[in-house]
Length: 92
Image: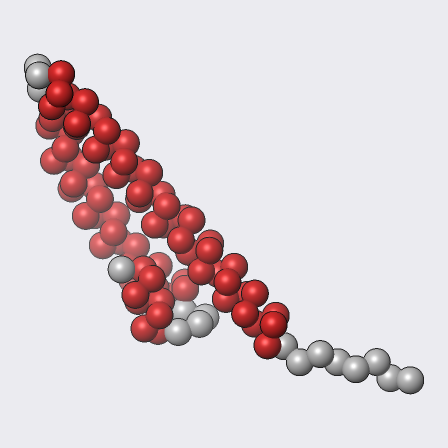
């Protein structure tokens, strides 16, 4: 959702995108974690491990979406701006 919204709104909109999309991503991640957390208390070892791994994976995915993806988008936006900046000629 973050990437799609960023592409839709264009360069310079990363703060606005995170502000509008971040809460939705946080809430959906939390509700999914709560759902899978129920498997952690299961007496069956297979279900227990699925619950643990799902929660760990969701947390990792959440931090990647909220921290790593925006950092990469900003990096590539800055890099593109530097390439397009006009080069000043030295005065001789």
